[in-house]
Image (cartoon, rainbow, N blue to C red):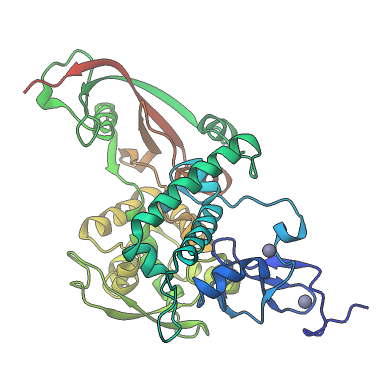
Length: 433
Ligand SMILES: [Zn+2]
Ligand SMILES: [Zn+2]
């Protein structure tokens, strides 16, 4: 039997705590120790000392202390294992595939080279008290040098990827995602005004009066209304308001052992006037761990909020003010978003709203964005019929990662009728002014 005491353990099998930290931490399956790899020694001791001593579990958001710093042969590279890609999402400022896949390599190599340059130039990277000056040197004193190094490293990694790729870019294309999820794509034709200013403006074919130019979303909404449909401009904020209001009692339950105070400051109408206010949040809010931990309470809460659409509307109005701190935390506090959330309850009805709330609760931070542009339906004496979500795309638009997540979630769980309307540029029209 393997001796699993921390001091003699060989840490044969380790698991990555979170792929997103610059100094990675690993937990040992045998002894439970938290390790960093000795190959990160320079960065851990000279650049990110605080990050080198604690880690964050990507499942539960729990903070854990490193028990075995700078242990030899911990990471995949040092063990000779094939590196697993962890591409960053486009929303985090990583826009090219090189930046998205090689973000950690770009960071690591640039810092190591900057440190080497400082050593060569005789520039001290610590102050008299022994505190690291590296980040200050990089961002202030020698930022041109750092920029230059970053450009060189980027060019080299590009070159390396072209000849000996470390990672394979194997993400499905937009067309693959649409096909795999059975998404209907409808084409519409329009004249595009050119040159484009801050946003694309279009006109129906045959219309020459440029004062009637609209965004592609408005263009599609006008066509839907002409078919006798109601249309609400949607996207994600109304769903965040819906969730924040109807779920606040479950999220902020004082009986939850992981509940703790959290500070929020938000601008604008319905916000906190930019002042810091305190509210309660579980430490693992929005993670899968949160819902796993509180699954029984989640189902009980979804029963409790009512069994009819009228129950939900009543609960929504009654809890609107009580839920404001949570909704401020979730950026979902404007009167307009509150009104749209109310419309969503009326149009979708109790069962579909509960499906949405459960889906969001199970992994909020992965799912709270990516909702389609428009919600449309026929108003009939028997209530809303033909409910449809529409995502509008201009000729050049691509799907974001969040939209792909929503499309998959819709096929697997939400089950809404959904289509993409592509507004194709059939004509260019020169802007006259
Ligand atoms: Zn171990
Ligand atoms: Zn290593």
